[in-house]
Length: 634
Image (cartoon, rainbow, N blue to C red; front, side, top):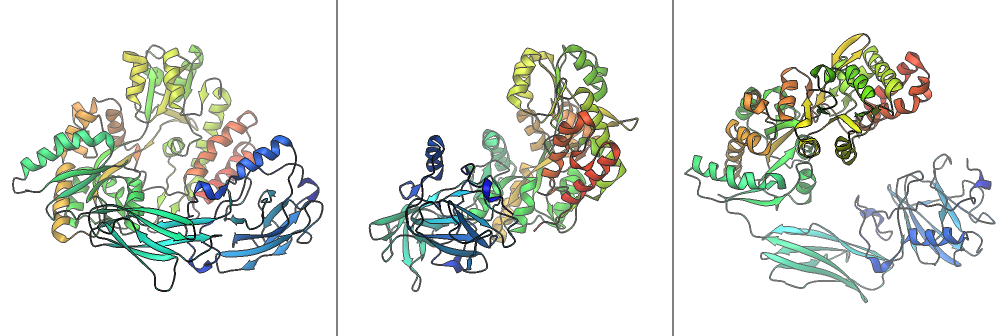
């Protein structure tokens, strides 16, 4: 329960986030919050800044204030000189539907100038929230709890939401968020040759726009003197024999100048066009696909961790069984596993190089033996008064020593983490080795960070001697020139044995979107086969320095000689890499990151957070890690 004497000691700096639905239509809630135009908002941060700087609390003006609250909360409590809604935990909120509750508070006592929303048992609550300053203001509370709120006072909302792209002949639904705005709504288009719009017959807050001709148009909704504008784009359908692509910017020239011409030469029967429709990073594709599948490119370059969610949403076409079997042979089991959802493959792999290796300054570590183990590396770094960076406070880097000591984890068929092995003695021993290592070298020689700016500057002035990092070869070579060394991950002594460290190895795929005709899908898949072929992967490695997924290309002597690529390829051949998307979900990262932060906090006293000291504390700590990782996804 709250200590009410302390509630007025400081003004809250975090405020409530604008929620997703209009109180006038509680049954039409949406997971996306409507944007609010600048001329209808009063910034909470500005109000708070003014109040804090003057160290005075401005009381609300008398009148009615309506708050719409997520169902996570049960009560509202108002305080100042008195308790407007009764003693803690206050007055119960009125249920609107399964997602929303509401309360209207009539302020008559100017001294009541703070509000807290809390759960029915009073154990969870918002921070002390400064009351809005004028009646009629709508105030929204989302499900987030705690002290890290951001938000705005919202006086009026009049915003259109919906999909803003369509092919000619397509239709899209629109919704209008209308709060605090009076008057009937009328809908219109400023160019009916591009898009027409028709209001819903029974609900003025809904409309449908139809794509008429290629171009852009503005759809407007108007009530009184307030207007909301929503720009839409209409595209002409592609020819059945054309192929459109989404590729990352770095690949644009290679695709245009190498892949497309070679594909046309290899397929003289192909008479269509292959064009890059847009540049998107491989990790952004799933989000872009979900916005509008119809207007998405036919083929896109995707990161492995985008494949699962896109396949779950039925946004991708599956790879044929014949192609899957072929890929298993040419790119290995991990090449298949990284692009699978269930037992179905949803892409053609072409890169496997998203991992980390050891970079170092050869002037400081001239002997190969200096960088073969963490023990020799750290000892030499201490001798040379330089630092080694290895960011075990990031979940991506943290698994390396646990894999080394035989800890296993992965996903079940439903996508849930199988993390029980983190409760084993293997994890405890690896954790203790890290604790002892940091106790000896932490801060002065060993730094848990991966700040590339610091690393690049540190390599130049020799304050950084080595780091474990992803492929930042170009920047490091710029800093060190021929003194830049790079090698596979070193060994680490765990429980008396030298164990080689492991790395993630993320894959990139070319995938075909769902919903194409059989003819066009077959054409796009033929392009994918060609663009991800051994010949194209070899050319990609030679020209872009990107690591191939094809095991034969990866074993090529010239490819293995490439910086970073060769080191990842060597670790692949040694069984020291792990496909990322096939082994972890979102539940993995935060618990893993906590290992590094716990070690940094507790190394001087051998303490594992609140779990105790030494191996006994480590056992309890890693039991908690196993449990946190293994929580089922919603």
